[in-house]
Image (cartoon, rainbow over all chains, first blue to last red):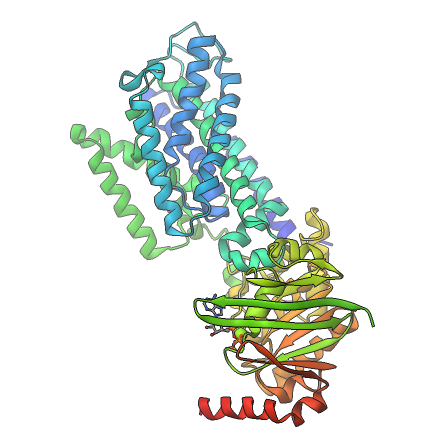
Length: 328
Length: 242
Ligand SMILES: Nc1ncnc2c1ncn2[C@@H]1O[C@H](COP(=O)(O)OP(=O)(O)OP(=O)(O)O)[C@@H](O)[C@H]1O
Ligand SMILES: [Mg+2]
């Protein structure tokens, strides 16, 4: 017997494969370095936002401190590479594992707080992380770390001028987070998390372990955010607390998901595709006036979407059409 | 008859208010037990203790001889206690079927098995036609049914119904009463809280009357309606409410 859920899931998987294939072709006709860089950054944020979405969207735990996982992911893989010569292909798993564990450590006290207090606590945790690294000599403190170039290599993800390999690395990252979200949506965990988000009291009356659900979601979310950090560090070749641990990153990681639609498979990708080019373009056109302007643009976009489309941009695509039809 | 549930000298206070003040009674396997009493008598608090939602200050609840109170709602659900809520709670971002699947996942980790169990349960509760609708779009009586379906999907031994008939029209309530009988016929033991004695008493084998956190009396419906203390508590409540 077939039904709505199975049919929808199959359709989403097919769409996913098509979209990923299209994203793989996308840079081929584009020679322009600037545009290729823009694509890479967009993909990075699409993956990060999906990682955030796993905790913030599906499980409803709004984290405003994800920069800590991103930044620590950068540092773990970079230090492994610089100090021990371990290439990022392995280092990114270490980065993910450390960040997953870190998310558990943060979740242990913070998930005892409810609602907005959780979000506030994550802001504080993010700031603490930033300050620790800023003053920690072993990791280069405020000076940061250069990633030495040791010759072109896929394992270390180092290329002198080519952009394409980074595009595919980021695309693999997007694919991994998307597939994780797709698998979660159809599993017991996904059901438990969404139940926790919608109504924790009802969820636990049905045997859902609320705290454990949040911890699991946080660990997976932290893992992928750390992996994204590892890839980013290798791409830019230089990290310091201001460029990978600043509080604005926490916002930047969450925004595409919020804009595109939280708790949806496509929201983070759509949000990133709209938001990141706009912010990068505005930054280059408006010149050195810095972070302030793009943040204002984000703010404006969010307000616009919140007013016009509270479910996020994804609802424009009619991906949830069936639900609306039925509601009528 | 075998005893399923023992409530033993249960106490719970909120601030200075004793919501449950030394409550004891047993529930036999397979029976429908009524739990009645005026507003604030402590009925919902008692459900919170039995379902593990709120640990009691003292006393305990045992299911088949095993203490379940104070061990959390997830354990109670695993042991076979399910409930509905006085103020309806649904997972509004999910479809009706998905809501019930959350319950079904209490007994299986396999999505297909959970889906099948949920579909069967929806059919049993007369909601099959609503399976793919978002939960928020249901009418109030349908939402009550959804809560019952979700709880039943956990395959409980004991089902706690908190005012599931309140606010329904007489026809809807009649449907609800039939559902309760069907659930009992499946071998599920039921405790139902209801304000309106005329609705509960025909359904139940025995009723516990609570007042101000204490058990006023326990007995068969015929005895309950004749009990002068019950009449006083109820009439008093009605006059106060009027
Ligand atoms: N979580 C809580 N915090 C504070 N006080 C509570 C809480 N739960 C119940 N109470 C108090 O305990 C008393 C009993 O409440 P309870 O909800 O159990 O009564 P009830 O019999 O279910 O009433 P009703 O018929 O109105 O639903 C009331 O005085 C109520 O205010
Ligand atoms: Mg009540």
